[in-house]
Length: 371
Ligand code: IPM
Ligand code: MG
Image: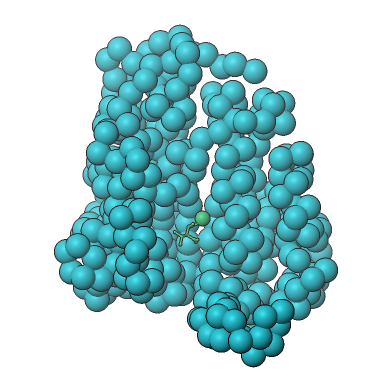
């Protein structure tokens, strides 16, 4: 089994190092190979997604990805910006199905910006289509307007589009995921305004005929944004397009109070996948040793489950994460009074210890579960 390790920028290198440490103690026959991506690759090779990095990712069974991006690259032409690396990997590997769970750990209920009773026990799964929509639609660019409100003015434009097979395959993914959960899918669209999303709604409805055991509801994206903060526990699986999914998954992540805890998986039709934390490169805290490595460690667990067929190893990691939280260990982002603040590395070490069955000396302490 071959894993491509792409740490990227900012806190990416720090958090991926901890996840690699955890993978190593599992004692499974992995081959891991590291390559630069994002701004780091631009510095090293003049491109955010060098040919060699892409080739490694394509040849691997799975990719463990940190994060890319730094404000200092904002003035580069678009094709050289770090973000192009992740968009390029999604496109080149055909990673159309993005799983973004938003789970509220009981120990962290108080960290949410919502009232504890609204988020306690929250477990929703956002399934975001990842290779279509306005992100990839052509044409796009800048030109002189020939019509509209200001003919003759400079304008910019993008193209929102979805084809039937693109919608069908993500709908199947969503209904099948719902079957393993609470059998409810909310399809989020903007069918009241957009042709693309009327089509989305129609096709999802057609596919639903094959899943009579799953409940399907349709919701406009603006209402979904509102319902997510009003009654988030009413959702089970949410399926939506690339751009709405980008926005709603950040919103859902924040409900849990800890974007530093949330993993994600992006899969193609062959179950080859890219696994990354839901958060970004956080350049403001990079190099300080305070980033939360748990989202990346949990992404490694998703990788073991979805792409490497090692569900037991995945369960060991998930149990270890639960255990360090119960021990009261917290990185700064999830710290609260009465818990013990630890560094990125200490958190990684504690997970390693929990995976291998040795608890960290001094780690045991009073557990505070507010709310
Ligand atoms: C995400 C990010 C990316 C996206 C950026 C970095 C291109 O926000 O994975 O959600 O918009 O998809
Ligand atoms: Mg995003």
